[in-house]
View 1 (cartoon, rainbow, N blue to C red):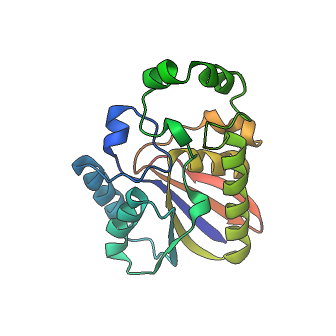
View 2 (tube, rainbow, N blue to C red; view 1 turned 135 degrees about the horizontal axis):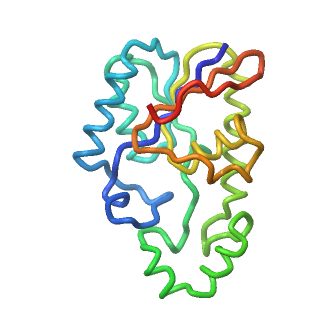
Length: 196
């Protein structure tokens, strides 16, 4: 059986400011560091075999804080990054509405398939995350795996493994440093914890 632990990174300034932050590489706030330390305490008794991150600073730092109780190798997998918001990175919804009114209307109308200018669509992000998590399940059918990633990525994983696909994407709210656990037994995934 694989035990897959999914943790969203700790709070960042972008989270506090309410701006779009996908591939923008930002740091944790003091609160984000505290949140990661609390997650580390909750996971300290879990004998992790592997830790994966998206490679961005906010996930890597969160993983490093959790890893102080485990001392296992941390691997980077870029396919577990948040959605690429392209030219909208670092902008608030109001700023996007003012600067990209037509593009925003198209995105809201076709939220699955419209690619953000110089970024990607939700379906493109979902596709790479789905591919990466399927490969992870093949490579590690046994063991305790921690993936430190992003809210959108974790929603994608839950939609794929637990839900009915990408249409379920908005059914999950993922908190900063919330711990979600999926047990996969002979290829059958079971959600056993959400945002603990």
